Image (cartoon, rainbow, N blue to C red; front, side, top):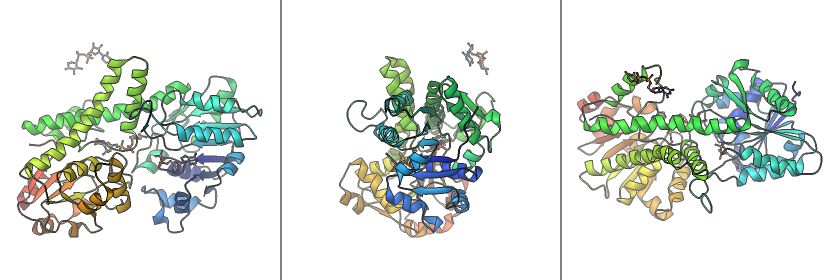
Length: 466
Ligand code: UDX
Ligand code: UDX
Ligand code: ADP
């Protein structure tokens, strides 16, 4: 059995909440979806009449928002009102890694989630299904539950775990054609009803068999494990890329050769400058923290190695730039093509570019960044957050430009850090002419052809190829 749903509320208008609710609204025209956030500026951006100003860039997103906003999709700061009216409440707030106290640097900081739960407990007057949508460590649902169960006002809550598997840059595609949707909940009659109710939302556009129901623990853990496995593939191929550079093996040929084994599969085997994004590192750190909490040190060490390898890959890339440029980059102009953690997103969280810039700035390089979607404010905020040097020094040493051709003028080197398609179509002959010679290109995304670049005269380094 299931409940009829008229209104949905989502707390948190970020990279997960915004796109997910937009797709639900577009696929469920009879349901009113309200996305709320305490950040007024962010809500204003979601409501901006110019759809190019949405706070999240995702291919296909603005078209969906244009169709649904003001009809059955609303963005608002009136959190309490939206909670009060909704039958289903998604919690989709940020869960950063703790920067203080117990579990510092590893555990997820649940304070935003807890605040949401307390707010729901305070406001709700009718029964609610509360859906945990943020990536959270196993056992969060039970924490939310204990906060909600003790309100004493007779309101009943069902807590579901419904982890999001969308990848940024392909969020809309991933939501519309999800491999699976995971819904974890209690194995009681009311828990089953809640699971079926949430399932019915997704079944508006996904075949029934793609909606998997599990218990809460399995659902929460599966999210961490899925991301850990994906990140592990990237670290595994990156480890091999270092070996390929010392031998005559080519990492692309190795990827292809192993990927054709159906047990291994071809996806997620692209060697790179290192994985980034808001999830991989955070989720693995979480897995490591949970394992250590239970005394499973070998398990913790095993997964931690995925991050150690990723840090090594970033450091290796930066050190290679420095050593290739005759062991000094002081005062040298190094152009970054790309700052986002992957193409087709304006998100920069945990982007490899941040650490590589930091390493080169320590050596007093002059960095010029061009990224088609990332703002200068974001780039400086990323650097300032590291606290390696003062904000003034960061602004002195690093500049951000809107024109890639201006960036490369008299540059010593270019580092390709994001795989934006447009970098492939540039006139690399023109770029060669504008640069100082020897003209170095360090391709951290394996975007260009080594043969062609060398033919044009570049000193071209490509990850995973000698
Ligand atoms: C990831 C998961 O894919 C998604 O299911 C989950 O919901 C959130 O975390 P996301 O971080 O948005 O999504 O992007 P993803 O495509 O997984 O890429 C993560 C990082 O790995 C990027 O920096 C990407 O460049 C890098 N990567 C990915 C590689 O370096 N090589 C690859 O082969 C694949
Ligand atoms: C392996 C490779 O599969 C094969 O391609 C290569 O040519 C030789 O090495 P093999 O060792 O014969 O083949 O068997 P395989 O099926 O790969 O199993 C290896 C071990 O892993 C076995 O002990 C198996 O029980 C174990 N295993 C495999 C698991 O524990 N879990 C799994 O999911 C798969
Ligand atoms: P994600 O990638 O998980 O979507 P984001 O940081 O992009 O993470 O978005 C999370 C959003 O949640 C932010 O816009 C933040 O302002 C919002 N948020 C955090 N705490 C609360 C809260 N208690 N009530 C409403 N919104 C919140």
